[in-house]
Amino acid sequence: MEMPFKSTNEITAMAASCFPVARAAAIGIEQDVLELVAPKAKRDAKALLSTLHRGAIFEKGVLVMLHELVGVLDAQILEGTYVETYYDHSPENASNECSWSKERLTPEADRLANAVAVLFELYATLAGGARHPECREGPGRAAQRRLTEHAGRNTRVRAR
Image (tube, rainbow, N blue to C red):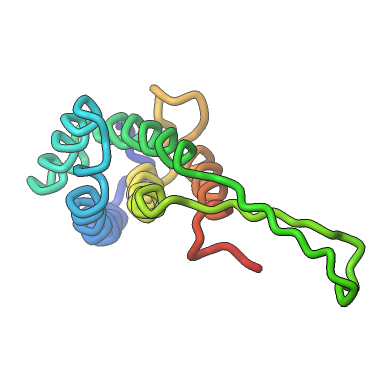
């Protein structure tokens, strides 16, 4: 990965911001991901977990591993998303709408969404301002786009 900074102060600041997020991501993978994903994704998650536990977060391929795991988790979160529709035909209903819908997550999808939020933060922090050559978008934009998508689905973030 090409680093966008040169001075030791910038490198120290990058490491200081990345290692705590990596520990949180490792905990998220252990507690929320491993028991909920398919065997192949579980192997990939364990490989990433091992890398995070070793503290080798700046090794080549970590961004790719994060990107792939987030893609798998994203698909599972979409599978665990459902829509609840509410109806109100009472005479006291003063609005023009007689029905409305809310997206909900299953408990498993909610756990995965919580883990994905931390993985996004790690991805964005590691990517810094660097362009990731194996992704079509810059890593900051891709992480920001996916985080925004998940924030709309996460029940803890959703506004009424």
